[in-house]
Image 1 (cartoon, protein in one colour):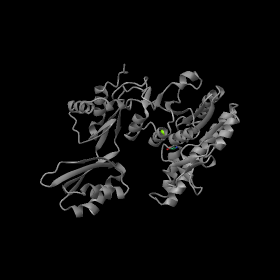
Image 2 (tube, protein in one colour):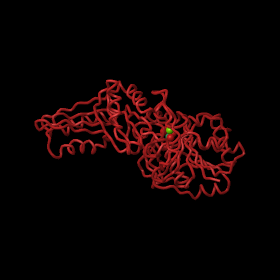
Image 3 (cartoon, helix red, strand yellow):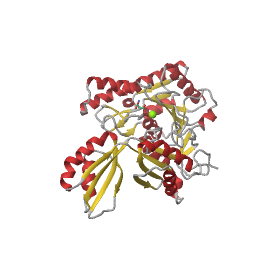
Image 4 (cartoon, helix red, strand yellow):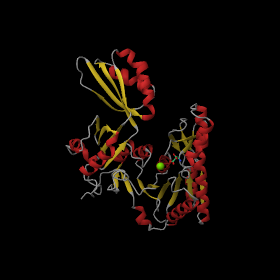
Amino acid sequence: MALIVHKYGGTSMGSTERIRNVAKRVAKWARAGHQMVVVPSAMSGETNRLLGLAKELAPGKHTAAYRRELDMLASTGEQASSALLAIALQAEGMPSVSYAGWQVPIKTDSAYTKARIDSIDDKRVRADLNAGKVVIITGFQGVDPDGNVTTLGRGGSDTSAVAVAAALKADEALIYTDVDGVYTTDPRVVPEARRLQSLSFEEMLEMASLGSKVLQIRSVEFAGKYKVPMRVLSSFTPWDIDLAEEAKSGTLITFEEDEKMEKAVVSGIAFNRDEAKISVLGVPDRPGIAYQILGTVADANIEIDVIIQNVSKDGKTDFSFTVNHVDYARCIDLLKEKVLPELGAAVVEGDPRICKVSIVGIGMRSHVGVAAKMFRALSEEGINIQMISTSEIKTSVVIDEKYMELAVRALHRAFDLDQAPV
Ligand code: ASP
Ligand code: MG
């Protein structure tokens, strides 16, 4: 007997018929002798619908008081889907109880719309499990120290599920979703993309932060911190498929580089169109210049990603970095108003039409020439690299957005990702 956490995404919970299917699947696991905790998302479209209503009433309002109400509002989506799932389980003859985040409680900080989980009390849940009930816990939400409802950011149910699994020391967190696992890259861009049977937690973390949308990045961070074994799998298989077969389907996120790990040097290719490039040209090359530019940007709470500073010529240098699209205009204004006047002759230039393409793999640690192979594949397609950034297990390039799909396909081919490793 194991303690298992299932997480179901919005599509999997999208209609009463689908909720019934989820209930049947969960009941199958419970009847096989497992203690079951289920964390559902809101029914698909519901969170957007609710947030859309708020926007209609108060376009562009960003006060803390407003964000508090957004969380009150958005959290109802998960409350409804959780109760419906408990009802469906009971209708299947399976004792079940649902709890909102505050009832567990799942304690968070007070950062409305992007709160972080501080602790989860497992007492109530354990008592129910020991009494033979399936426990449903709302995804995406918690309660702050003052008793206000909070939410964890879009896609936050993944994080709820992993955090609940960590608190209960569950044997595995199964993340059921509308894809059947983690792929070498997005199959919509590369039809030959392959599902990975396993992926190391560090690779998953890079993939999630570099643009793969399969899991909320915080859920992966949580899984890493508490060593929660987690699996991404499809909720669209028939609910009555053999349990043993289901239990090893999808993609397992592992912590050890064991024998069974696929031995590819590069495991996946991630891409991100959400960034824009900003350059400050003709900056005097003296100590403190990076701080002067990037410190000002950071103080405005704008997150910076790839950074390059060119070799200086005649005492002047160019400085480029990327930011998220949503911060692009604000960042340019900020530089023009606050930084340029102090830098003398410098000019600010921007390019929102860029994208970042990254290769990820723990095999890069022990292999040389991986980045060179990447640059060669891009050059053979005539794609110019504007910026490069590397870490131990990834290399990212910033290129013109119009070459994104071409680049991803070329790299997928160059690293043999369409073939299963032998
Ligand atoms: N319902 C929330 C959202 O749409 C949380 C989630 O689905 O994970 O972002
Ligand atoms: Mg999701």
